[in-house]
Length: 506
Image 1: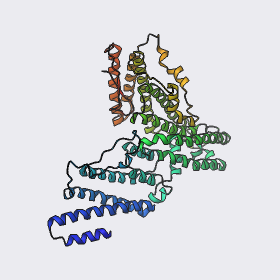
Image 2: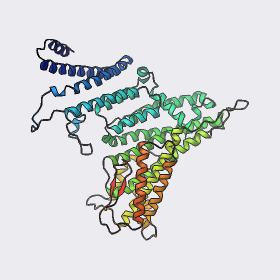
Image 3: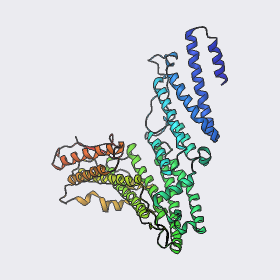
């Protein structure tokens, strides 16, 4: 602030237009720096008034960046042949990190201002996350930021805002514990959360349920914090997250068993088995799926690994689909009356967004099977490169890929012997089966499934539709013997969809 006042005094006494222009550009930059530090200070204070000031500070930063852009020409112009580059990059600190982190390059001053403007617009969205009042929306918002790969400032403030223990005081929204309670109620409608069930008022049931959700806050905070990490770093944090969720899973099973015993005593029409277990299982499988699909984004898998990666994904999508179907059965199976002589109440319906998600998961499962059949056919035709291990083996590689999944009891960990027995390519040797045609049929089924999904005009489903249509055409051509004599290896094109490739034959 003192530097800004001195620069403003210099501007008033500037003797020429050029001098005043340079000093005015300096004042803009000092104001910008002051507002940026004031914004960070307001976030760190963790008060409701500080959060209100954050939005004003960000708006001023965006306005100042726009004005700074128009004064870039006032700055020093370097010799084009000079090795020095004036500019900015939000992840410049990552130049010593492993190659799996995406490369960077110093941006020009014009592009630097554009990037800074985008950062502050993202920070404005981050502040809105603190006001979200459902766990599902909170998770989706954090996951959306994760896919954008924001810089460390955005991710740090996202953690501060979304996972703050004083969310209710800062933003007037629910605490994380209450968000989890409401999410379990909406997804599975357990009797212990249903006001029409006597078990919801039993002191013993209320006590053990409260203890469980107080215990669940820490693992779920780690779960959300996982997606606030740098995207390439999330895989390394998954094992620890699954460890804590695996411990919570055991507690959930004991809780359901105890609440079921209480329910049978006071409300025999209802059952409490697997209510909270199904709710937790849904999120455990989500972490496992994200762990595998992140490998596609950072090109971590060799061509020979793709078959068992899609095989395991199909297995997880099957569990994910079953978890949602179990939740749906728990909701619709609840009795329609509250008791003798009482007015009948309308049965609860499964949430529409969850029902739509069930269709999407089923579609992805079909795509996984289609890609498995395609890879099997290409392997039998000796078109895919096979590994040559000097150290280790394919079994060791398989075990390494899925090692973090050993922390949870359900879904159970699949072994390499399970893979060889159930899905090994050798199972198709000597059999009169056209695997290209089988792959095409699964891609057709996936296309039909996408067309049946309500509100399917989303970016992901449109890209997935393009993948299945293109792969279906390619499989039909290969089934007819097209380019059978080609010795070139096929390529997996992930440019259309990040997780499901188009098989390119040349």
